[in-house]
Image (cartoon, rainbow, N blue to C red; front, side, top):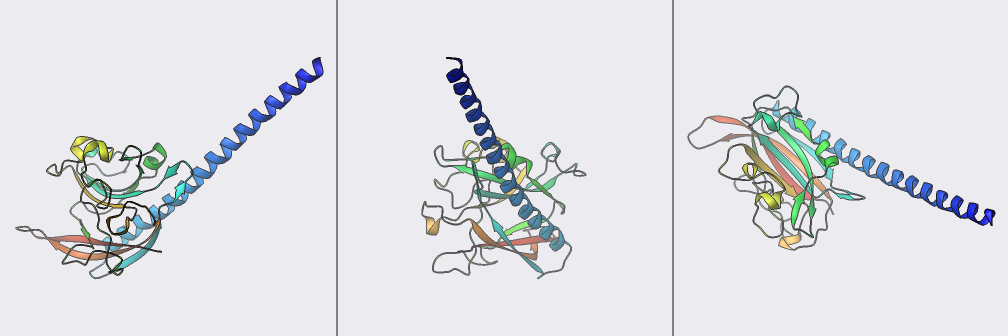
Length: 239
């Protein structure tokens, strides 16, 4: 009777070991995938920093992919400026404010944006001045909006933490997955330009993960204020 019991125990141990090994492989694969995304985010960051030192109309072009990393889907790319130091703790040397590039996922079951710890850890700090302005290349007079009829246009960027093409339209703190003070458009704490995975002409199906991001150095003058540096962002789906 002892031999069958030992065989059963051995099989249980073997299956448990295989399950642990598979989980480790999956976790490693997801970590490597997200690490590759961070490499692309860093390329985008360096392009912005380099462009900030150039004169208009200098430009840089970056191909950017939003992959599915096993359990983590990269669906949202956010350019944000925080004017409160407590949001800049991850950015060394930035005590008053900071620019960051952040990644997030879209949870369709709850219709909201979520940020896993892995994605949060891959936030990139962009070393450019706080008075820089991010301009949306889909808006006149800077450019035109992308559509199937106008593939040379630019995907509209959200002016808050939610993409302009996110289902539902409205963007509150719960939907954005952030605190209320970071979503309030009348609150100067954060300035946003947000890209979401492309929905064809307002449809609901996410079909694109690869984008071409064109950054152009520009000059911006707000009403009643002097000129400041600006980076125009034009994003197009790559099919």
